[in-house]
Length: 420
Length: 113
Image (cartoon, rainbow over all chains, first blue to last red; front, top):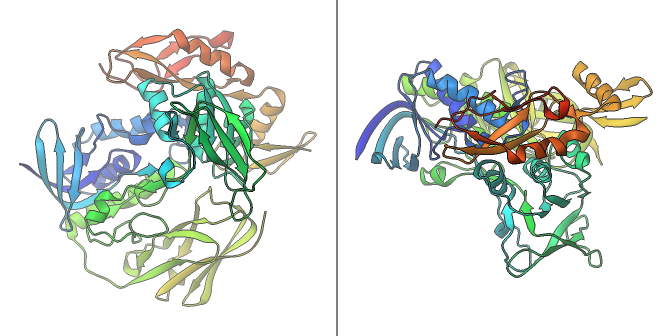
């Protein structure tokens, strides 16, 4: 087995891994490696050929491949080692990585710090339990995106999209531009989970109907999808009998959520959060296992790659520090997502590692207007933030001044805010 | 009063136009967007062309500037017969002067051989 030693080893060369590796190198980690299972770096950005990336970070509008290329070029100018076609099989608590690639066979890597940047996976049909037959023509939206944009395979001619998350909306437009007909986009919730601008430029621009509070209740077809039945749902998201409507189509795309990729994290014994569905992290993106960090979609599913980049910069910096100096255990407090919040990140923070502010990220669990975000410490209110509008489709961030953090538990909840 | 959802950035401001008066825009680009949306709506178009001599068979492209919205589908059709030979540099012109607009399709990815 070939052996390597690095100060910082990064798993995944998507936007999170690339930004984290560069930042680790800039912060004094001399030997940095990025392990990527695909034949090229860039991760999911390579299939996201639409534009709109980079407005916060680069102050200009880039496509996914262009955004990736900025980081890949920067990486090539450094001595960071990019190991492509390299699949990581395991990570241990003492930061020993076992990986495999066709050139070198099995590799054993010892790292001063490890950064998990594996991204997430799509929820498949099996996790939805849609009744009906099991014909060809059912894809997750991201898989279809890769087929169409990278592999050059068209997935179908008449498409119904289930779920109105951003990938589903973006794919609706892509399918039309490639000559397919998009019959409908069907969303279980009474609102779309995607960004508002994607509703406008992907559905409205092409007159694609969006059915809210509706779902697919049957998929029909023997060899290939022939039609779907959609039904309206009540407020408990149960289909309402008598509202069924059959839509002829040959393809169903599922855009029904993303789940952080946790295989390696679980095997490393890293504590996971039921709500983010990714690892529990501290203020500097360190997981429950010292020296192992997580950033990007593996930690929480982001809407914007710019926020992935910024989160990964924090992880890269912290990993370089850990590799150089290690860390002494220090007292920490917990953060709780209370009423109105779907999750909160970080889940834990250590007072002595917080700068002037603690940045806290979360998603709300419903649509709210004129709502207050209330931060409590040991039961007493310490800060309050106003929002005109908050929706589950858009990640929220609040910045709490360190001097307000005194207790050993922080609870964030929503107050007021009429539900639409 | 007409409502627009700004598509300039992911924030997606809801901007209301009452005659010439615009309210709700978070920044100047939103105002610009609504004015253009009322006069001559334009969109960036992104798609792919056939690529030979590389590991993957498609090369992503985009319009070098927004084009009139009603031209989107016809512009995308122009790409059907285009084949590009690797290597290609990001930014290289793939189709010149789309439908007389003066806007080009350019590559958005650098691909080696």
